[in-house]
Amino acid sequence: MLNTTFRNVLVASGLFVGATLLIAPTALAQTSDGEVTGVVAPISTLTFSPTQGTTIVGGVANPAYPIGSLGITTNSATWTLQVKSAHGGQLRNIGASTELTQYIAYTGLTVSAIDGTTITPVTFGAVNTDVLLIDAVYSDAAASGVAPTVTAAIAAGQYVPHGTYRDTLTFTLTSN
Image: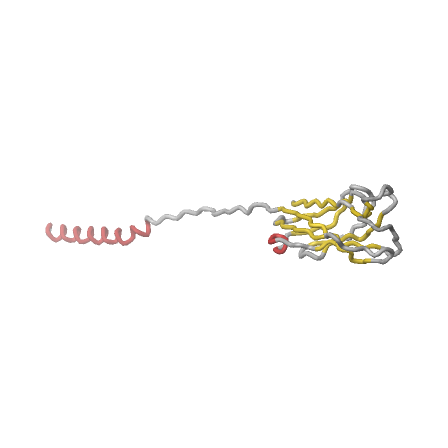
């Protein structure tokens, strides 16, 4: 009887150990969570290339006089572009001693359309005063780089002597 009892205990122990080995790998499993992050560096570049050698015909209107082109690359969530004119929106005769009176006024300075932007044509009211030209939100186009053209309107009836007329424009890109 002792032999039978011992054998039954031995068989029961073997089943218990076997069951424990079958359960053990699951009971020992562990998990670990961790965040993966990446950083996108801010990009904010601006270049202006003025148009050279465009002839103005005295007295004739030009509603889309080519001023130049911009190179804008920005990946900001919001951004603005401001512009100011050293001569308040006047192309002045740089070779004349009467530079202040010999000028061609221009209005409605604007840029061609860019995705995600609100473009406001600019007419300068004061010398060297920043004026908002573009108010924008993120766009794939601006993030990969755009090159909008800059134009202005020259009204008819502006007769001036021949020569080279110039203004200095300063564009400021502000990325937020």
